[in-house]
Image (cartoon, rainbow, N blue to C red; front, top):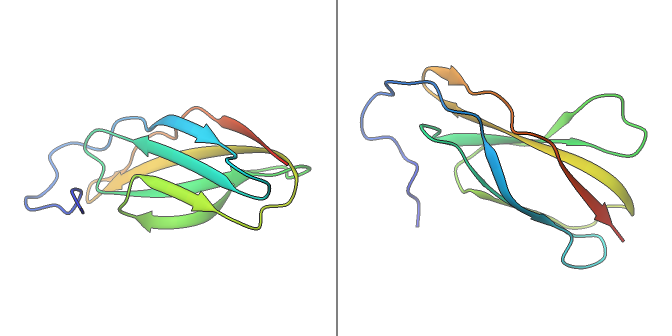
Length: 100
């Protein structure tokens, strides 16, 4: 079910995104669940082992879940940025996931 499609223009920029669940359910896999008040789409940012900065790994997704497979073993940090027609909200606090 898609519940983030806007039917009226945005009246507020998105609030800070919150990651409610972050884990590695199996080797090479990552699972995130998140939300942000007033957001209609999301970007998923990742900072991997040895990476100096976060980089986008998914953009403008409208579901509030992110799953990745084939992720190399190591420690990763993820952030979520909510977006609507007025702009981007603040990024979430980083969530650290250890991938086996």
